[in-house]
Image 1 (cartoon, rainbow, N blue to C red):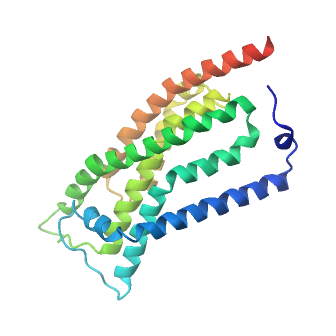
Image 2: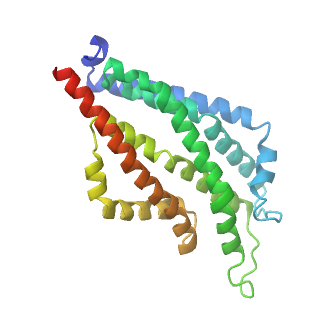
Length: 247
């Protein structure tokens, strides 16, 4: 198999132009999904504050409106995730063989499913544990009266990036399938991976407490172990395809 003629001779400027096109389409999809989300942002906001269980304070006249927009944007990002993933695939597709481009029908649905699974796991398992710990920390000293700005930022950031993190096994599989990484390398570099996961957990956890960070790290470590297994499968498929091409 060989690359298509249109894709093979792309210059850097053409790649940058392709990136601009994909970013434009991705932004348009996100804007449309966000506009649709305004119709149910109120219900989502009420749903988000359930783990906290109390009304959220606002300290500025425009804070409530800003929070409403933030929730609509977060919902828009979730709704448009299949479209965003598709645009990502279209950007990398010119660098693939013709037979490899068909994997878009696996990549987009699977990545979307993993993203939603991550959001669900974060909501059902991680959020209640984190909110319970943080709101109940030293109750005789601190009165947990959180503002809407801080709490909604906590919830949306946490849910979104945990969802993105759950796509790691699929990304690793395709990297191995295209010969970019190997299962052996991932296995040998597990110590560095744990350090990297700790850094990622600290970045996506909207607090500095070790409990929330450890709760975030645990599923990411398990996902990394799953990634090694999937990388082995992808590597074998890559080696098999290379052997067939040589013959």
